[in-house]
Length: 330
Image (cartoon, rainbow, N blue to C red; front, side):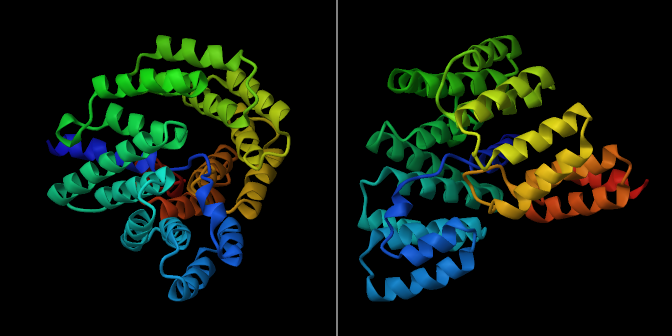
């Protein structure tokens, strides 16, 4: 049972990572707070939102953005409190329920075993509610599927449940359904089937850069640099100004072992210009890849510094912890 929970905790951390940005937050009545949030100035957003809530305590959008801000600050207790209030004020808003599910998931990941199971079940419930309220909320759909295909049955997980929701998602949006199915096959280590799904997506003409970034993530994990590059090129052809491109180019160049100066520039530029936010690759991951780049160049002190910074942002990443110890011995 404890092993199952450890797996669950890791998956909750994964599904609460970066996602497609929501839309409800943009409706916040405090435009200054929204601007601060978009720029990654989450403490300033919190201050502005609390001041606004004192004047307009019945505005759900203020509590929703406040919950998101606390989430980005990794203050999940306050995130939950704010999002629960937002859900009370706007109970039929799918995005609020999805973010509340993410926050419950983070709380589960950070608490002791029995309490964590309670938080995990709450997370699953909120994902279900979010999907029931809006089948077009693909972020919630993917969160629910990701939870079910990784979590043990004791906390409402299970492959049968996940596959049922994947089938339903495919009927609403075939591309999102295929992405979910490919992720399912990858998670279950059914790589021949996963390769077939992601290759089909790669060879499709889809006007969404995010789809190709997800395809790129898969081929990166499979160490297939050729198809990873093809996916990034496709994303670039869809939107050459997408702010995620610098991250993906930097990772690709690092894996290819060429143009290290360009790889360094891309990763550093990404870190300095794109706020650390749940709708983009996390800064912890960008610093991990910068550490890998420096390690490959035998710049061990700089590599150790980047791994250390990555661990400060994501203390539970065992691979980075091992990398940090390794370069310290160099």
